[in-house]
Image (cartoon, rainbow, N blue to C red; front, side, top):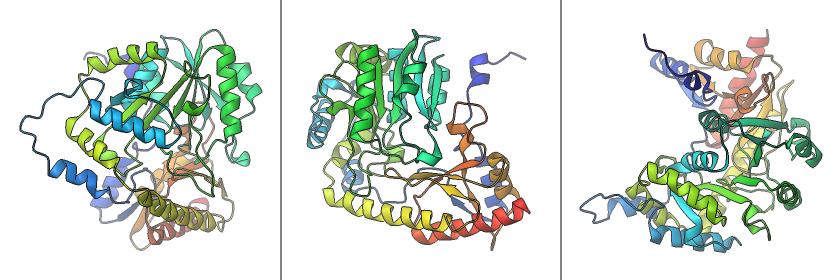
Length: 396
């Protein structure tokens, strides 16, 4: 039998999706599974985006431009302008989801054996993209006891070496929900300028910030034009995960020209989804205010209910719609699988994402889970009750 590649064998599984077969088996056996494992919002997609696809007059579904349609990129640049980010259409490459933009970034800034520094825990697919590009992830640990704030900048300095190409952040963070302050972002900007490396920010949750806090983009920093790369997406902003439209944004012309070669290799981003994404830019600000109000209520309910469970430690998110909870167990992978295979309350169970997959340091996060609070409050409350009863049974 032919062998698959070593690269393929070392490709990490998604901690978010690897338990899907157990969830599907539970459903086939008649159980209701409450999904806390994946950031799929239940918020309705803006009708204007859906109508753009339903009501168009396209007769030939043709390729779009490699970098995405000019009208969409121009309107997207205007959108960024309303957020204090001065870019133009030529600074933007439309991608098939933020995921493809991340792969373009990896391929454009690093060669095999080069390194990127990422505060952990981090979005699990960063590991996958790095593995595919033969790039080494160098983690710097952020701690639940500090609410996953940016580690001291001295810790980054210790890790920067001759093969370091970039520092990666997600802001607000997946899986932590942490929102970096302007002071923290400025500290990172100073060090990447000093070391002449890139600062890459995954900013797909920009709109979702709470407690009167504001998002501060790396593209707003004067003098960082050559170092700053932003990855963005419509998936979470407009509850359009299935559209698979994202983008790469940078004022570094050499970086954009290089990323364009990767984009040309996949021809073009999806046409219908660009129509929907362009139309979504017309979504009124009231949409986001209503969504933020709902997410704050969900967050507050979730944290309040989790804190009632003996032995649980939970970080308080300031953005996005995720939180990390530390459980009084030793193996969250085993616990998550057991929930799906063996535990029910009124024929219901929950699916969570074990957090070890969001770390690069072996052994970290083994007793933690990520919870996505993208469900209505009644289901969230029911889910936490199931977790509480499950922990009693599992530990016992």
